[in-house]
Image (cartoon, rainbow, N blue to C red; front, side, top):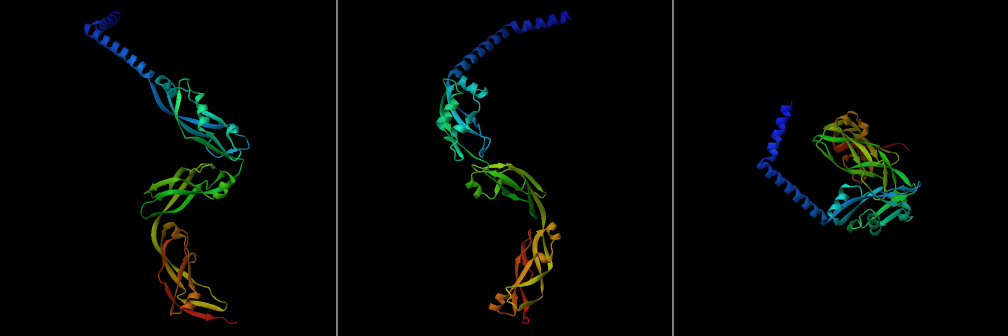
Length: 329
């Protein structure tokens, strides 16, 4: 064992103290020394760097509700030596700036922190030699109320298109409504809130999307996100027989009989919708006023309404024979 370690020590001596390796060690030493001098010179030079500093509203009264974000961000450009900027970048000197609700609220549902006031708060965390050369935005605003709220439904927004021959048969929301807090004026103007812009295409199975609600300035939403489910169905062209024709605008004592009394309707819908359709779900009419004003051998009939989920609906015939009958007085 002693021989083994002795051999290793001998090899190390040879490597370290040979002429070639001595020259390499000298080169590495001076390279490291020059690197230290370069780093010291570089860090002593003056630079500018932008920092993102969170700003939070604190001291909110128990009876007040902040309707804007509790934490906003101010972007500050600081000028100082490189070594100081490094401590800002990787240390915890630049912490969150807290602004007291009572000091900046105006009593009308809004609060404003000016750029000058923000600079004072940031300077409290900076070294003596640091200077702020730029700050964005020019001011920060927050909104609040004292419990005014209402419940509004949620609707999706964006582009959601399934594969060809498929369509969206039903949309479900969880939850289907949210509570919003805002000023009375804003509450009166908001009747629905929308999701962020969705963008989905070329799907055929049920699509479930967890999404944020689109933000509205000065409005707090609880919750601020929902789950939207898009149910799909296969498109098919079908027809339904025996839809009754009903007369409208009949005066007292008059009736209209049509021949035939029922018609067929052709349409495009989903398979699951078609299974549950009945002829009485469609509303086909003959208008007495039109017949009276423009008498002809045949009268026009019109498809006035169709069930939900039906598209491109049309009558197989648009004119039928008719007979106007008078009842007994």
